[in-house]
Length: 290
Ligand code: AMP
Image 1 (cartoon, rainbow, N blue to C red):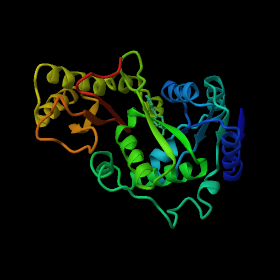
Image 2: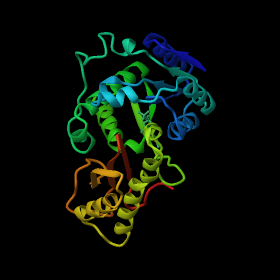
Image 3: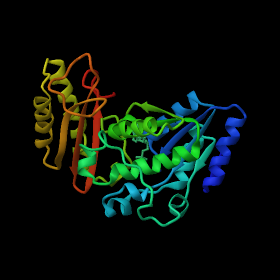
Image 4: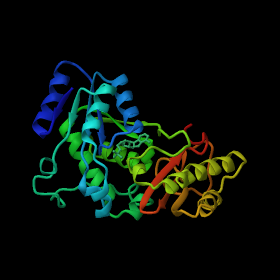
């Protein structure tokens, strides 16, 4: 496995792979790798000849400076995880390599309208501009490839699909299922910041999604009623504060008049457990991943 920290070396390594007629899989991450990231790398390794993982805590996508300051960093363990899952190249650029003008807003940014607006976009101003900008840069450096993203960040996946299509990037975006803890909590790099009581309470997101899916199964089709079911579960958990719970169209992330079994939909939820903000989502027709 080759570890590179310059754009030139990263681009050259992937160009060399394509020159050898090998397909490239790209897995962008912010490090602190867990089983969710490992599943993305493993899927990329199963479907592509050469897998490149990028590890970059992107300052541009943090609207909360304390969240950035406390973001876990575990580079040595991350490199071992990349190697174990079959990555051939890991790109670990310093901030100055990604933003030579400094970790401020660069002159050129990418902003996705529509899908980036509601939910996470509304709660975290500037977040998706930061994501879209860094992903556009990584795609541009990587060149033709398949890029693997988790459904765990469902709106982010929608934003990345949109930007790749709109900017005619030579990148096929692949969505991968959410990996959960045995009690249903979606794996997240932020879970390590939960206290023991908050960690126990954090299953409330999964429980709310499960209750929402049970209501759909029982015939409920009204998005507002499904939001209320999920909100009720969170309200019963004293350590959790709900930010939003919604039933949306899976493509445009808008709330439809009614859920239509012929159309893909998604239940979305965000809540705070103390200082930690968690998100989760699932397909209401199938239920959360086991
Ligand atoms: P992050 O390091 O949090 O920016 O995440 C990097 C990639 O891993 C993104 O595509 C995430 O959606 C994905 N990811 C994070 N957590 C999970 C999970 N629990 N299951 C599947 N993918 C995940």
